[in-house]
Length: 275
Ligand SMILES: Nc1nc2c(ncn2[C@@H]2O[C@H](COP(=O)(O)OP(=O)(O)OP(=O)(O)O)[C@@H](O)[C@H]2O)c(=O)[nH]1
Ligand SMILES: [Mg+2]
Image 1: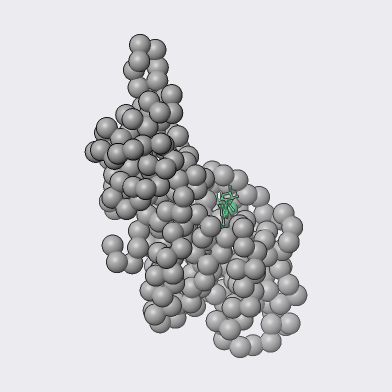
Image 2 (image 1 turned 60 degrees about the vertical axis):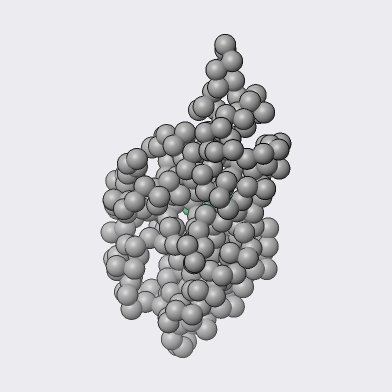
């Protein structure tokens, strides 16, 4: 399966980030805690080898906590990288960012020129939401779809800290279909750019391997069969049937994807440092 979604505004966003990198004290890379490796944009590495880096595993409220802890250990063991978790439902965790930031950059007088941090990441990981949480009010536009932020926005969160919100962007060629499927499942690729049925089967194969209990519980299944049969049974249990008893695969696929995205399946991670 080939999913590529790199519209013009992403190309522009990438160029504009490249231009301001020399004026940045630190890059705050927002990752999705459910897939911190897949949501790490390789283009950010390419133009910021010298700039210090803080990785934030956001949406931790949706991820498998034990896996997230493994990711934190994994990243914190790397040189020049500090990582932390953030989530919608734990404001204290997110606000921790303001305490960690000054410790990660070279000391200078921030009252003369504020500490300037660039918030970057793939679409829909929660960059603008984090900025709003830090400000305590809605300043940046957010939305449950990719490519909500279209231009850079500078926001002074304290007298000494300036954050720059940026539009999420991907990279022109997604190397493997696994990467593309995960980005699609997480909502970083526009829904119209992929086939929901492909993504639902991809997810179900993974869930049956790593999270079968969650699938049984959510869809009232007694036994787990193979992927095809499981999707068919779920469709029947959820009433995703068209006329003449034919399964509505589009409808059940969208349901499975949405159940994963919203956390209705439970706390699930799509990758761990070991895999
Ligand atoms: N469950 C959960 N949802 C979150 C969290 N952070 C953000 N969201 C949701 O994720 C969606 C995307 O958030 P945004 O802040 O717009 O994401 P963004 O990274 O700025 O996206 P672009 O501007 O499109 O690149 C919104 O529906 C948010 O409410 C979180 O920690 N937990
Ligand atoms: Mg945004």
